[in-house]
Length: 160
Image 1 (spheres, rainbow, N blue to C red):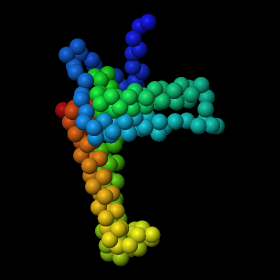
Image 2: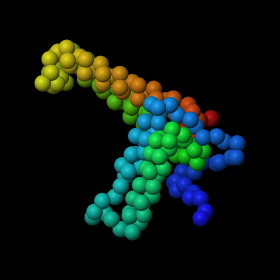
Image 3: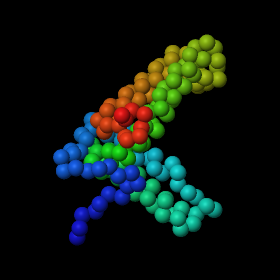
Image 4: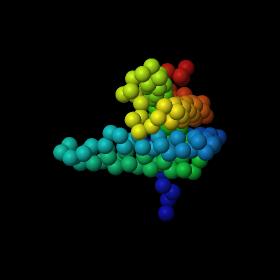
């Protein structure tokens, strides 16, 4: 039985000398989370026709490949460009999430009760915001670390 070749929409040029990218535990978790992104554009009824169903199937296959890479802790050369493209989308979103959380905390500190957590007191709210900001910042740093490992995608702002 021949080996399965990965099904991806974005293919990287593979070279026998290219090695898989080894991931840390945090990077592995982030790549597994990136695996959800191909499913964001799934088609649902009443828009389902044969072409839409094939696109859905391709998206699920991509999601499975990326999630598997994250779970394995290795990004194969065949997925480098695809993951780089996902990271190009995810980094600005993660930076925006971090900034939004900081802004909400600052508004809460200035007295905007709508940015607080009604069931928590002030110390608990402050601690929760600190945890949320730390999480968002750590996630952003992990995405940047992965981006540096996989290298820039041709045509992306970071590539020459």
